Length: 206
Ligand SMILES: N[C@@H](CCC(=O)N[C@@H](CS)C(=O)NCC(=O)O)C(=O)O
Image 1 (cartoon, protein in one colour):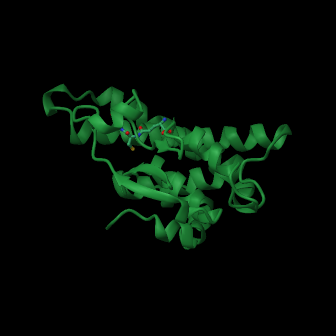
Image 2 (tube, rainbow, N blue to C red):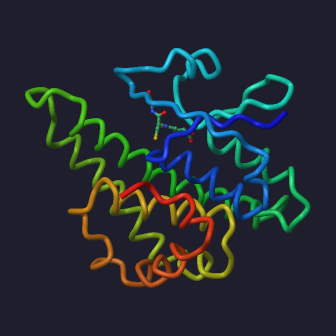
């Protein structure tokens, strides 16, 4: 029996999991189960396995379910024999997880902006709230460009997976943000990162 991953090719949180599965040679352990959902169109099947109604969720062989993406990544990183992508202890662990959390902050803000523009009725949209989400993205990218780029470039670990998926998601959903012009070091790094087989195999459909 294999693991079952609730999956959408457009979800950047799912993409992080798929990238780690490729990077650690575990992709063949997983069956992908398509899930189409949003806060206003939930999936009953996902809700049964994750009360929060979100993907990714990973059903294990014994029927238990893991979520969210951070928990799943940690679990899967304990399931392979290669070098861990999440340092197991010490300052390196907290630093890598903190950078990964910053990448998630970009994803959270971008997903919220996407829901705002795609789902919320036009007369209920709130400019100041949208601007606040964009500022979160900008501040986080400022930090990654100025204070974390060398770490991202040093190895493709949990922080780099998160950052690469976040930049890919900006391309997909927030093209007008034009992040490459503002963040040339991240742009240079991402140009190489997106060529990795794991990133190519998990790229959202054009
Ligand atoms: N913190 C969660 C976020 C997951 C998330 O927001 N997933 C989106 C898809 S990209 C989702 O399931 N949205 C449906 C909803 O919010 O109802 C994680 O890291 O897994």
